[in-house]
Amino acid sequence: MESPLAATLRAAVFAARVHATHTRKGAAAEPYVNHVLEVAALLAEHGAPDVAVIAGLLHDTVEDSSDDPEPVTLAALAAEFGEEVAGIVAEVSDDKSLPKEVRKALQVRQAAKKSAAARQLKLADKISNLRAIMASPPRAWEHARRVEYVGWAGRVAVGLRGCNPGLEALFDATYRAAMAKLAEEA
Ligand code: ZN
Image (cartoon, rainbow, N blue to C red; front, side, top):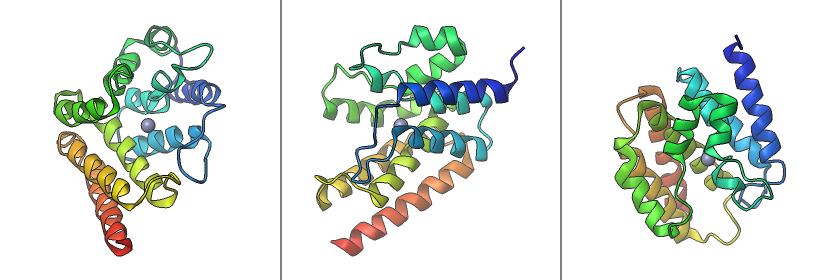
């Protein structure tokens, strides 16, 4: 039987391979894998279940490999890491066939309907994304767009509450710091 640590590291290696050619949108163009490691670490630090930590490592592999020569499928994740992990990744993945604004609205509307593991993962994802927007915003994102993004993340997070007080408190602090910085820059 594989230990949780071995499964977690196997997921980290899998994610690093999938994201090997991907970078973050920010001006610093950080390796994408830094983001999924941060999300998984946030989940582990705040006592999320092992399946959520493993799904945290894998959460962007399906969405972000759709244009790659060999896209990762949910079926492949299920075969490698089990149905539960694949199910959590499915819950946190957007339907990329929909326009961006529709996807963003759906995230707000559907947040509260997701499983506890998926909600914790999404909260950790939003914390990492808010940090990235503040530390290294995409070059083309002017002030209004950053404000809009932070506000939207806050609206998604409303529906993610009730499953992990520690992560919720960290999200709130990150959100407040982001809004304060943006107010200063206005
Ligand atoms: Zn993500």
